[in-house]
View 1 (tube, rainbow, N blue to C red):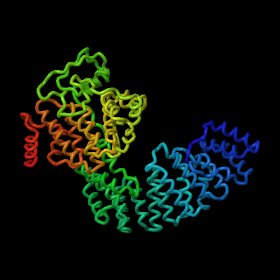
View 2: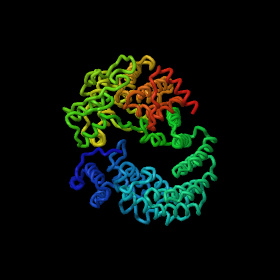
View 3: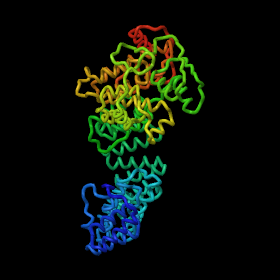
Amino acid sequence: MSPDKPDLPAAEELTLARLALTEGDLPHAAAHIAGALAQAPTLPEAHELLARLATVNGGGLDLFPLRQNVFVGTVVARAHLLAAAGQPAEGLDLLVAATGYAPHTPWAEVPWVTAPDLAERIEPDRTAQILMQVCAATTDPVPRSGQAALTPYLTLARNAVTVHQGHPLLFGAASALARRLGEVSLAVRWASRGLRVGPSKIGEVRLGYAYRSAGRIQDALAALERAVAHDPDDLAVYADIAGTLADHNRLDEALDWIDRALARDPTFDCAVHTAHRLRFQRDGDVAHLIALADFVREHPEDSHEHTDLAESCAGQPWLGQITPAAGPAVDALRTVHSGGQLGATVGLESPVPPSALRTLSQAAPGLRVQIAEGPGPDPYEPRRAIGQHLWRHDGLPAVGNPSPLAADHLRQFVHPAWPHPPAAYDAAVALATLDLADLLGLLTHPPAVPPTALGRVLDEQDPSLWVRSVQVWACLGLLHHRTDEPWPTSTRRTVLLDLVWGVEDWTTEAALFALVTAAWVDPAVRPEVARVVAERLADAVEVTRTRPVPIAVSLGHLALATPDLTPPVRALARTLTEGRPPVPDPPRRLSRLWRRLTAIFRRS
């Protein structure tokens, strides 16, 4: 369905329709009537002209043909003509299609839909089908702002159950619609009446959903368990029971139901999705979500769309969003952003990532930043020998500016959150056209915040968030650079590893997240990525024994998001993310550090 039609006010559309009718130009009259209905579907004048057109043309249906990408006004006009021609069910089908296209528009708010006799003219099976089409076309539940537009369908349901009191399927469909529209008491009553007329699995499911919406959880569970008794092989009901239990903090019972479903069919998608979500909810182990991502990749033909992975990752550091930056430069940056005064010079007692220093300098031009020298490794030297340098020792970029086209292209995709790592990887494919020089330039010369709603929100919330978001998406773009090259010898792998082991910086986090994302989508790279993450984390921990590492906590969160990380490394990551710094100890060789850490965690 398409909105493509020149926008004229409804009144002007009707004026042109009248003129065309007078001249006998019926196709143009029909086009203008459709245009008026698309903007004002309840306008009486539009319906009067439509009736005149039908009289002149012998029904008028041929003037409103259904084609691919048909205009929504054409669909609605044809619906009304079908009803007038004695085909109200077919007309309702088209109105429901329009509702699915624009749910907040009152397409059905017309007398023939709410007339009591309509229910007598349509078979109850057909009415039930139409009501379920409405449910499928709307959200569950319908937001309050959208309920009024759907009220005519609820009136149709009332009229239908009044006329057809012995039809359980109709009561169930009416209950489903009432529940979506917030009429939960009515939903319970109709579902109960349907079960009295004819007990069934679907009737118990409808009643269970209605009870759940009404807050009657025990009654809901009892109804859903009766549904299982009707059909023990319908594993979707097991998943519903488990979800209901989990929503009320009864995880052990929920997992018991999921295990029962998986015992019957280990590949049933609803049970698999729910199982991994609940297990992650119970213990926070990312392995459950990675297993779910693998299942989704290996089973693309699910029974319906699932949101378990996205729900589990939402708000989780690096799984669903960027972690906030930390450190003295960021504190100073937020002070400037909030209108505070720093004076002409600000002294910082600990190392500052070059990205943070550059962002602070751009936010407060002329501000002199003095960084105290402290113990430990030089924070402005790479942690290992690398080939690709982003930053000079003085904190200035070592790469050039990206092209304006590249900067504009990236700005269209930058966001601080994503549904889950595989979704971020998929979205970043749009950056595959950027060349390496541009992607590296974007890391050190991020474009300005766009004048969009998202840009304003990012700028208002945290001035560092935009820069970090740009860097994350640039590194995700690197994952799609020259994908024809085998991973072990690829440019994308080499460059990302150089960024991981370069100067301690926000770009370290961004590059490591890109590698972690690669491990999510490609099991073949997981052993190497787990090793890199473990080594980078251990290096950061070693440095924290002598001086602060502003990115250390974020590296801990990245480790916790990494597939196949060993238990000792995961435990080490938790000490960072939970604010329990490692016990100070003299620096040692990395291999000795790992032996010591492994021994500690095994003893504990």
